[in-house]
Image (cartoon, rainbow, N blue to C red; front, side):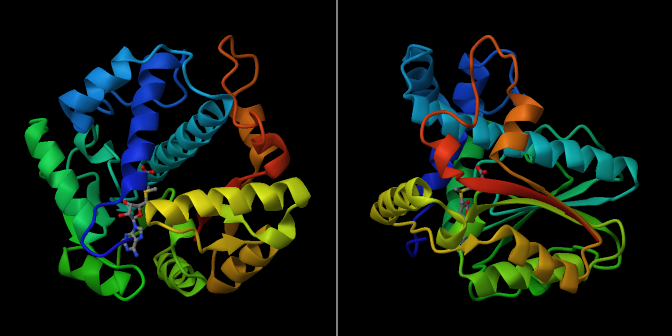
Length: 290
Ligand SMILES: C[S@@+](CC[C@H](N)C(=O)[O-])C[C@H]1O[C@@H](n2cnc3c(N)ncnc32)[C@H](O)[C@@H]1O
C-alpha cells in the first residue's frame, strides 16, 4: 500500500465481482450491490462492455475471485448456524456483505478492518451510492504491518471471549510473512468455534518453471501499481505452522479442487484454470477452524 492512497487492487477486485453479476450465468457468487457500491461511472462502464470482451486471463482471475468470496460466505453461514456472533472482514476493500447482511445485529456483528485510506474511500463510495450503514457494522482501521489486530478490534467493541469468523481475501500477498503469522495467531487464539477463510499465493519453490515465470510477471504488474506482492507460502509449511498455532481443522483448496467444486459443466465455460492459470497454479484458498 502507498501511504495515504486507497487500494487500487481493491477497486479491481470489486469491478471483477460486479462484472460477474452482469456476465456469468448462473453466478457463483451473488452480490446484488456489487455494482451499486462502485458508483454510476463504473456501473455505466461495466454495463457498456460486451460480455465476452475480457481476455481468458481476466475471466480466469474473475473465477478465482468469486469462488473465494463464495467459500468465505458459505463458511460464514455455517459459522452463524453454530452460533458464532462476530464476523471480521480483514482487508475488506469494497466487500459488500455488511450491507446485505441477512442477520439482525443481535445474531451477527460485522467488523470491517482495512487500511485507513481504503476505508475512507469506501465510506465516500457508500455515501455517494446512498447505501445505509447498518447498526451491526463497525469500521476498524489498521495497518497490518505495524498495529495489533487484537487492540484495534478491542477498541471497536469486538468481544475476544466470543467466537468469531474471519475472512481475509486477496490480502496475504501484500503483507510480510510476519504480519500474516501475527493475524493467524490472533485467529487461532480465539475461542473454539472461531475460524477463517483466506487465500494465498504459492511460493516460487512450489512452482514449475511456467509457474515461476508467471508469478514473476504478475508480481511485476502489481509492483507497478504500487501494491507489490511480497507474501508467498508453501502449503505444507503453512499448514504445519497453523496446526502449531492451534487450528484443529484445515482444508487447503487448490486450483483443481476449485474448478471441480464450482466450474464443472458450465455453459459459459467460466473456470479458474483458464489460460496460464492451469499451469501456473496461482494460489490456494484455506479454510481453517479453531
Ligand atoms: C486486493 S484488495 C482485496 C479487498 C477485498 N478483500 C476483496 O476481496 O475485494 C487488498 C486489501 O488489503 C488491504 N491492505 C493491503 N495492505 C494492508 C495493510 N498493510 N494494512 C491494512 N490493510 C491492507 C487494502 O486496503 C485492500 O483493501
